[in-house]
Length: 176
Image 1 (cartoon, one colour):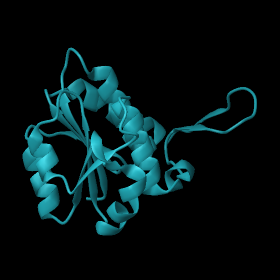
Image 2: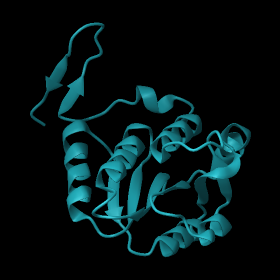
Image 3: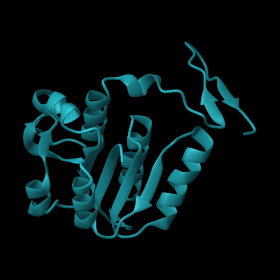
């Protein structure tokens, strides 16, 4: 299992860009994988798989028709379910307990209105600032706190690699 993100309520005509940013944020900031729930979007899943192929992994992305079934299965296997919401407990107050509670964690990031069942199923309803802002920003803060910054120095095995530089761009391509 590991650290997973569940993108709830994806809508084809409205959410592809935001959902893509949720998935990219999950990958770059330490998640092992993500589930896209809502309307099926094979094109979006394929785009993320191509990024993983080019930029490295591991990172798995898949469509799950039944979000509640996916959550229940995750919990049944011993995982901790976190609902990111501005109405929850402050991330800084609960992150250590979440990390300690279980080695596996599933984080829900909403698109459309999240049903009350998600709040009831959650082991933790967690807020990042209790103010209106981007769900992508909330996910980034949560993942950074959960991973304690280790995700920022992860070595990637992709074909494309950026070499940090003070000025300019340094991109290295391999023929893996």
